[in-house]
Image 1 (cartoon, one colour):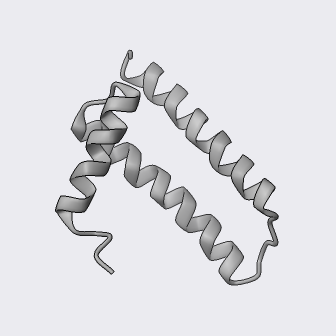
Image 2 (image 1 turned 90 degrees about the horizontal axis):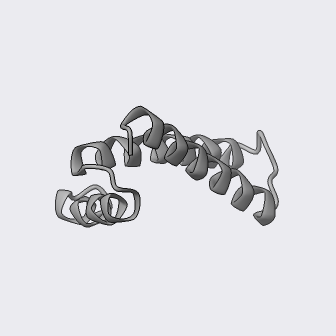
Image 3 (image 1 turned 90 degrees about the vertical axis):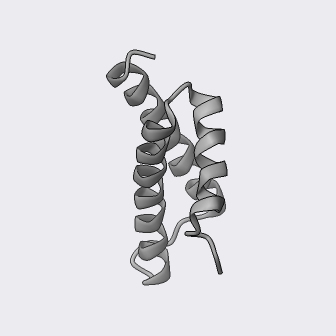
Length: 78
C-alpha cells in the first residue's frame, strides 16, 4: 500500500487547498490533524473500545471536518 507516497499526498493537499482556501503548507497540516483524528477513531473501533454505527462514524467525521474548517478559517483569516 502506497498511501504515504509524497506524490499521492500532493494531490490530496491540492484538493484540500482548492476546497478550503488553505495554502498547500496549511493543507498539509490540516490533513495531518484530520488523519490523526480518524486514526484515533479507527484504533478505538479496532480494539473494540467503542462500537460506532456507520451513522455515528459519519457524524463524528463530518463534525470534526466542519470544526477544523471553522478553526482554520478563523486562525488563518480565510
